[in-house]
Length: 330
Image 1 (cartoon, helix red, strand yellow):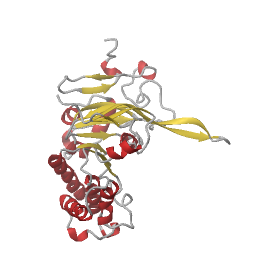
Image 2 (tube, one colour; image 1 turned 180 degrees about the vertical axis):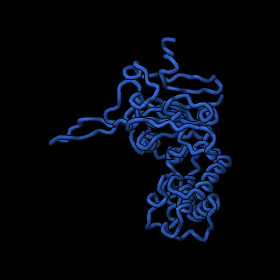
Image 3 (cartoon, one colour; image 1 turned 45 degrees about the horizontal axis):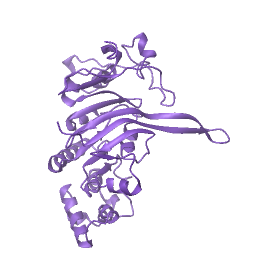
Image 4 (tube, one colour; image 1 turned 60 degrees about the vertical axis):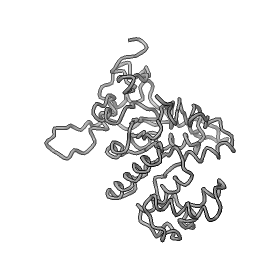
């Protein structure tokens, strides 16, 4: 088995909360709290969870748009966390991001040509003529006409703006892209176009994606592997087909039950979770989900469950839940 393109180990991002007259740190918001996973070359890991669970912070911490508090990130053989300023600039050519809001992520004062040429300018790639040709090729790749080169963002639809955002992410021929809620702001018909575009680009260029979304149906369509995140931690990861067919964690089961079913007579029952998501500034002890879990047991309140593989070595299915016993004692 070949080595993964991206390896993330125990990645943590805590944001300090300041208080008092001296603005001292009085607490920590544990946005991401010890997350580990791999992404293979040319594969997509879909990341799902409720709003505020830390998905976007995790994606930005991997790219060091947020400086991680602790942990390791390796892109191929390069330590992203330890990279200095000049090395990080070089790494940026291989790591890019597609932002959620296709309007806010584009400068209203720059034309499409200026926006797409900027990464090439920053990294000193090609001559002036070669850069223009590259921009024209990028537009063609994402399905836009060259006639739009000198238009501004407000002259485009949401779907067209997102295509510009995708083109910008592709400008430096990256190996890894974080797609942060890349289709959530788009109409359903446009969503399918952008998803198909991402799928085509992955097939053509072999790009690996971390696809962040709260839409379970979208994640199922686009992902090879799926990770379920709750309160800054991964609670379950598996192949997309396996996870959707047989979710193990009670939180995953609740999320899956919320997916709309076309047939009202199918007999599927919605699992409604009680209570609100706890504050990441003061997460519960033990299992972070125990305060809302319908299957909670006494040990869930005091003992944090460990990740264990309920699948096989070839098709792993990792779950963090006491329902399946403690691998340390079984």
